[in-house]
Image 1 (cartoon, helix red, strand yellow):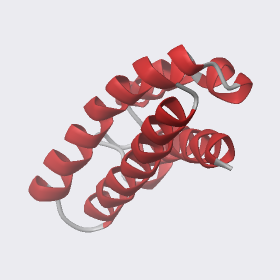
Image 2: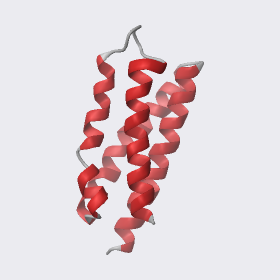
Image 3: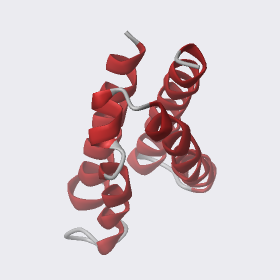
Image 4: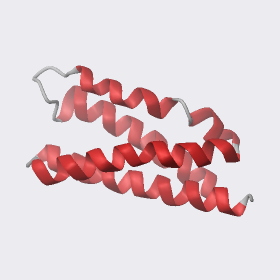
Length: 107
């Protein structure tokens, strides 16, 4: 169950980052290179899907950067971009909780 929650929230966060920066509320009209922020999220996906404990451990630290970005942009922006930032915060927290719980459970 925790593996599914972690993998699902990671996929949703990748989709959110791409949609946010390319179509929904990009920093520049027509999209921007900020969409490349989704690339680091692809690195742990295979290990998360396979249930590798070490991947859960290090990716729980990686996700904190997305949490920080979401909090910062949620505080400083308005409109749709603020809603997207709050969604990023929520997905980051779900992933973090699932990853830490899975790593603890598989000790």
